[in-house]
Length: 106
Length: 342
Image 1 (cartoon, rainbow over the protein chains, first blue to last red):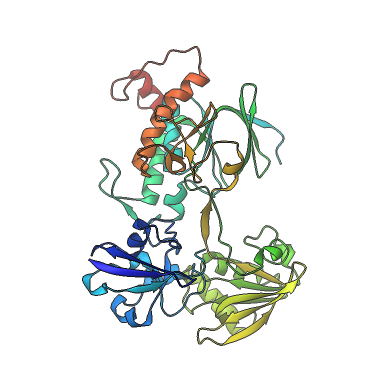
Image 2 (cartoon, helix red, strand yellow):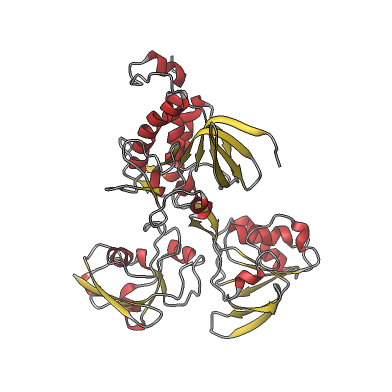
């Protein structure tokens, strides 16, 4: 089990428990976390599950693969710490992960 | 604009897998259909969002891509001679004496006895960048598609994005515009390599300019853009003067005009019964991802089932005097004749 904290643009936090093997997007949707639209349902096809990974977790979550980097072209306000949460697989090592939700998924 | 009214038994709104299979189920029962879709080709989400991605839960097909599924459905429904109207969006549905009248955004009019809404998540519309105040510039300085290239003659044009649409319009508008600038957040493009090369050549010859960055602020007034602020990858910002901005960030699904058709809605979904999949309006059915009922699952599989039951109910409306005899395609020579296999 890994505890994942989603930080809303207004600073409020939702901490949810995620099973290893599921994606960070699924953990958000399952727990009705605001701001993760996940329009395509996790196919890396829409860029509406965009998150910013907090600095101290960037190494553990890794860099986006080519397909994800392409899809980030369709996100807004993309930063070096941007990821699509449907492409981050939960592991025990990610227990404590903190990600920020952007102002808008578009 | 066509003034002729197209008369048919059924109009299916949405050419995704569920809308396409509805042609089959209706066709077996002699209900003729026209299919309308806002995209330029069949397949809906399967074709637009994940044409290359495998689907694993279609019965008896262990693995199929969105595009293959679409192609095979088109082949399967071919005998029923449905007519397709792509690049059109149904804007209004009105009850008339003997059914319904539908009008699209292109002015095409249909009169039919039943309407089948298979619109999935709604209609695909261009993504609008969440830039403050962008609405004020839309259709005067900010455009999400190009209808008339002449509108950009002698203008300073800014194109934002790195996909095929951004690249194609960069190449097409360069000879027309006074100046053209392409802004993209990185130096890689997810577009046809030939287009990228042509764009690079235009940059090298000084005919267009390419700048790395993301647009953060719009400047101008009274709907007339004068420029934008662009944030570079290193965090610094610069001003880019322009008359026109064309952002190309792909498509998103919006419920769109469905909300104005007078049907009961629950959280942007259309409630239906589970015997006929009929909406609150008799003769208007809703199948696939757009409907809701207790136990609803948004699966292609479920949409196919809904289409089969809907067709039985639609038949009773189109042929009120005919008794419907249930038949199997494996054994009925009548159905096999319709399928063109006998």
